[in-house]
Amino acid sequence: SQQQQPQQLVRFLPFRSIAEPSFWLDHNAHKLNELRLSEEGVPLWGFFGVSNASSNAAASAVTPLPPAGMRFDTSSSNSNDILNSSDAAATAVRRNEWIRSSGNIYSLNTIDSLKKLNKNKFLNAACLPSLLACCGIHKHKGGESSSNNADPNIALISSTCLTYCDLKSNTTVYWFAFPALTPRSGCGIAYSSASASESTPQRRIGEVWGDQMCSSLSRSFHRFRVVQEEVNTSGCQGQVWCPPFFLLLPAYTEGGNTRKTKCLPLNKSTYDALTEEEKQSVIFGFVDPNTSPSNNSDADAVGWTLRNLVAYLSLSLGLGGHDKTFLSYRSPFLRRITVSDSLDNEDPMQESYEDVGEDYDDGDAGIGQSLLLDIKIPLASDYQWPSTKDQPSSSDSSTEADIICSSYRCVGWELNKNNKPGPRSIDLRPLVSPAHLSRQANDLNLRLMKWRALPSL
Image (cartoon, rainbow, N blue to C red; front, side, top):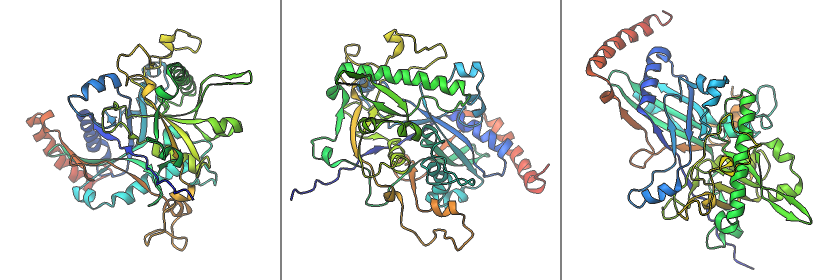
């Protein structure tokens, strides 16, 4: 019998948090004036985009490229009402060239609380319910799964942050996490056996499809973004910016029948509406934040968002155990979609700036560097971890949701500057005058006494 090829695991590039100092100044003020002694989570919004591959290629020869970054600024927490606003002014400036994440930030009152907290248990409790609800595993109180209604473009990309704000010294200790469902030990996400037997399991679409089909894909994805922007603005949802996931039906001509390249939204109802032939040929696409050039050591790593996409296909769409093709969509940049964009506009430069061919001098530029990945999707049972001693059971007061969630696990805590699991810190004192620091310290002492003695005052 033929010897079975060893599995080649997919290598993922984790997110790195990029939080502007203004974000922490705003959050510290929110903690002082609004949250006070509360340690409840408050909304947190992050966003990431794609890098210009042609400029990165030149820059990487001098300095190493940073990993994919999840950014946080002044709009990431306290101003989320502006981000979600559906009025014309807010809609006209939607930053839909970025991909958005949602989650919560938890501000603890003492550094000891941050040190003693069981981080993995906290991450599972905070993030598993929404992830499993999107995948149709966790059921709401009404008894119905939300897999048909939950938008995977929102639920599958999330951010969580634990922080301790030392308001006297204006220093902040923080630890970001980008949760992803993970299979149990020994059941990693691997390339299919057919692709593992080849020299490389990744294929660049510029070499496989050619420039004409790559240009067709670029235009189709742009039209898809325009349609999704119109759906989001007209429906007053205000949630999705650039859709991070999509279904791709490649163009083909057979027996007089012709189908153009088409991008469709990723959700259970859209997938179920496909014909059996389309389900066999569909490619699952995701916008990859990793656009490292081919001479970079991280070029063969794929974006962190693919983890939850694979889990969604296994748990929600029932594709566990199947070999499926994924498209790591790597574009030099994405332009902003405005309310003036129209599907009737046939100007190719207006349809898409994400193109390939002679418009770019660098061979790594354009979406031609996007990758086709043949991956064997783990079984749904592979995501269920064995029970542990502290796992809730039906004999205690735990709810059914707690018991279900305890069978799954998340990973995603960010590494610190030493490339080890641990928090980071930022010193904000250089941004604040000494006189203001002194007044703030005195004011904080008075506020602490009032919060403890007369919290309702």
